[in-house]
Amino acid sequence: MEIKTIKKIGVLTSGGDAPGMNAAIRATVRAGFYYNLEMYGIYRGYEGMINDEIKKLDSKNIAHVLERGGTFLKSARSAEFRTPEGRKKAHDNLKKHGIDALVVIGGDGSLTGAHLFYKEFGIPAVGIPGTIDNDLAGTDITVGFDTACNTAIEAIDKIRDTATSHDRLFFVEVMGRDAGFIAINAGIGSAAAATLIPEKKMPIERLVERLKARTKAMKTSNIVIVAEGGKSGGAAEIAEKIKKELPYYDIKVTILGHLQRGGAPSALDRVLASKLGVAAVEGLLQGKYDVMAGVINNKVVYTPISKAILGEKEVDEDDFRVVRILST
Image (cartoon, rainbow, N blue to C red; front, side, top):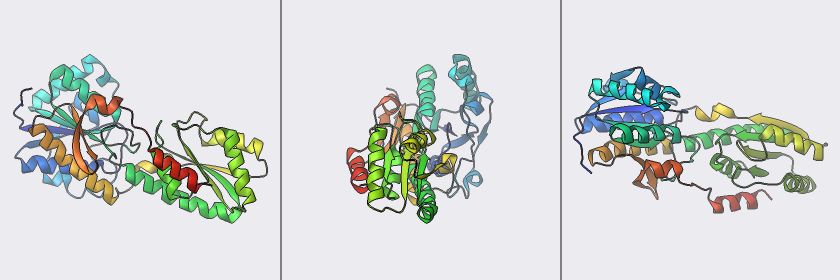
């Protein structure tokens, strides 16, 4: 494969926001400046690419963004980009600005867009995994995941105060789409009575027996972590089923929702995002196209985007074993 001469790189964030995206943008832009490249911000993701919301970036644009949550480039989902006509319009805008390559920060949908764009128009692209769900293959951890876990655990700690005060049973629903990574970490870190994830179905009968056993053991509070997207339903649905079996419990439901997306990124997310921002630019200059930069065993690796979005990333069986042991 021919290595193209790259002088101008466009960077964008797409899909759901994640803490650390600003840190990834900053590192990408600073790395570009280090290698004497012109850097362009594409605002509002692929939708902004179609609408020509493209601006040249300088040092002022990335000042004091490292510690901020969200993304100053904004994000949006684009139905038009899913069409050949929309992608052609986006490509024409990149050509107008002379942009040679892209760094795309986001989840599987965002990286799919970069993959299609490379296949159709030959625009070199490197993806950075920015999603709290941690559901992309090719990296041990995604940008935003650690902060989301910290946010969830902090919220659950506060819920436990009221659960203990009133001997209540709380069902707390965390995000993750169809992956249980946040739930498992929150379950371990918050001493949950049980953790329900999409990958491991727990029959309601087994959950009922576990809660009965905890009642006999005089546990003063019970918190059950439920990952969204589970086959048994969300926290509210499961709580209703348990209420019928254990009517003596005072049951409450809390859905943490988008709270988990916000907030200043943790130290881990800032460092991870910064490493991957530099790796994305260096990868492009080395001719690594249509790949995602990730970290495995604390080393930067490049994985084909097609493998990153289609590969199975399974929850760690040992983590799930720890959850079971600590919840008994």
